[in-house]
Image (cartoon, rainbow, N blue to C red; front, side, top):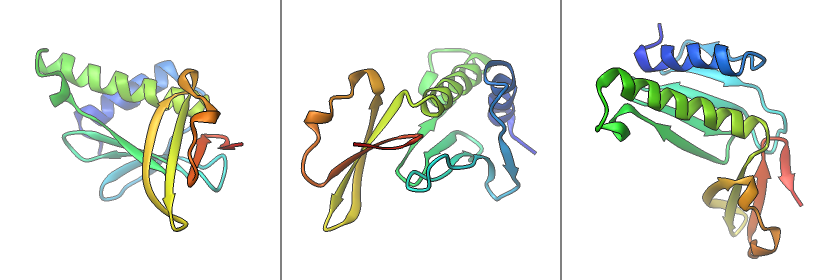
Length: 139
């Protein structure tokens, strides 16, 4: 059974991104999955850790969405803010509006940075780096 944050996330997903079919995996931890659009990227997974949502952008990187990032707000609003940020992030990822730049050292994943597609400049990529969106690698 989803916690309060995960349930808020699911409710907002149903309202804002109704075409996205999240597959439920019981866990632990409780996980919601969108199957990969490109094998090199991997599945999008949303983990309910209890006090935060952790979203894997495939096998490339992950992000945290937590009410404790919004301490200035009342508790219910913190849940809504964290869930809203997670839903917006998922929407951006699935619409290819987020780029992950992965650094490879000796052919092995070393680090990753994620940024908005609008800020993407292919020419800034360095040797050993590769860029991805949900649909796959950017060339």
